[in-house]
Image 1 (cartoon, rainbow, N blue to C red):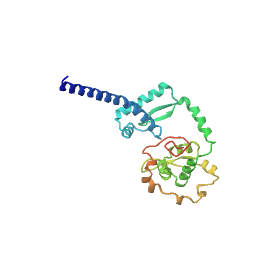
Image 2: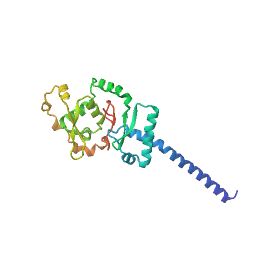
Image 3: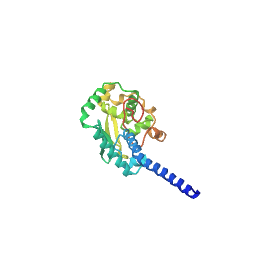
Image 4: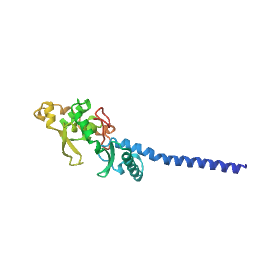
Length: 228
């Protein structure tokens, strides 16, 4: 074989390998995209738009939209206890209606469990800063509190208290049940602690690691995106 022929053969083999790698990369992309979408959607507290997800994950919106619909179909086909829905312009996980009674029993049973340290801290922040948004509570604590807030809402200790005029964010406050459980006649009987709590505005810039750009979901075990 001449040097020219050998060179052409080597180039051809190299092109073949590159073509194979490229095809493999393209084939792996959906596999990588779907788990990434699942990971993000596990921690959102409000429906996430396709545009936002595409921006966060660095994929085209069309690819994200296709992957979301494929995931939704897979969950339905596999008979999972949850489903992925497109609601209010965004995607979010929901409990499948067939298992609503099971979830209700779990939540109601959880009302008799003791609150975790994370829940008690979050409850204290809301009690002293109410009405306050979830993001401000998270900023004050330095960790994401969305899961904890949901637990406190489910147990009737917190309730919605309007919305923030500037941002439209939902505000939260304590309930009469909170006062009953704390043995208080009113919020004016809370100990003088508020002056020692930092203002959220002062620390928001330092706590961005603990406060993601979208809301998140979770359980009652610790301070994380799955913090209850």
